[in-house]
Length: 348
Image (tube, rainbow, N blue to C red):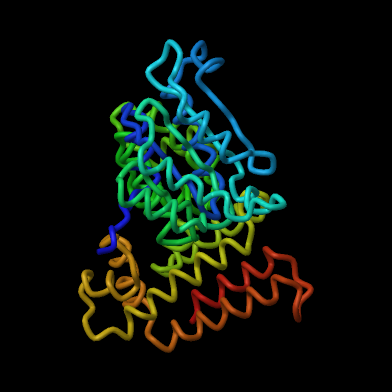
C-alpha cells in the first residue's frame, strides 16, 4: 500500500522550525527559490548558534557535491551541539555531473535509518527531485519531509498567502490591507514577507490595517487600485477620477497594466455574479473562487450597479485598453488611456 506524503505549507513549516521541532531530512524542491532559501537558512539559524557552526555546519553544492561524501558527513556526530546540519544547495545540478545521473538514489539507504542528531537539508530548485527510491524511503520511514515550493500566482493565491503569513505572526489583517499589499508588492516574496515581519512588530494590537501600511510602507490607503475598484463599483465618478489623477502624478508606484489587470478581475467577478441564479454571498464565493464573503458582496453590489450588458461592455473596454496600453493601435500615453477607460466604465 502506497504511503501518503505529508502535506505542509511554508507557514506551517516556518512555524514548526522556529519552535525548534526539526525533521531528520528536508527535501525543499520546486520553482519558487525564495521559500527554499528562507527555510534552509531558518533551519541553520535555529538549530545552531554562531559558535557551533564551525564544527557542525557542512555545506555542499550540487555542481561539485559527491553524494557518498554527503552521506558520510551525515553519519558523523555533532561536536558540542545537539545537532549537526548538512545542507546540499542546488541539488538539481548533481544529476548534471558526468556519471552522476542517479546519485540522488544513494540517499535512499540513508533515509531508511538517518542519524537522529543530523539535520539533512536538500535544496532542489527549478524542478522536483526525481529519485523514486529516495522519496519512497523517505515516505515509508517517516524520517523527513518533502516541501513543494510552488510559484505564487496573482489573485486569490497571493491574498491567501498574505493572510496566512500574517496569522502565523500572530496578527490579523483585513481585506483592504491584504489587497493593498498584493497590489503594490505582488509576488516579490522576499519584500512581501519582510514588510509583513516589520508590520507585525509595529502592530500594537496585532492588527495590520491600511493606516499602518500607509504610515510604514508608503502605500496610500486612499489612492490605490483597491480604492479605484471600489469607486468604480459604486459609480463614484469624483473619487474615481481623483484616484486616476493621483496615479498620473505617481506613475512608478501605479503602473497602468497592474490597474487594468485588477479591474478585469473585479468586473469579471461582477459579471459572474450578475448572471448567477443563486446570488447569495456563499454561492458567489464558490462561483468566483474566493474565500472572502466580503469580496463576494463587492461583486454582488457591482452587479446591482451595472446590468449584465454594461458589464460585458466593460470587459470589452478593459481588453481594448490592455492592448492599446501595449502600443497596439494607439499612441496615447498610459494615463490618458486609463482616464478614457474610467470614463467608459462609469458610463457603461
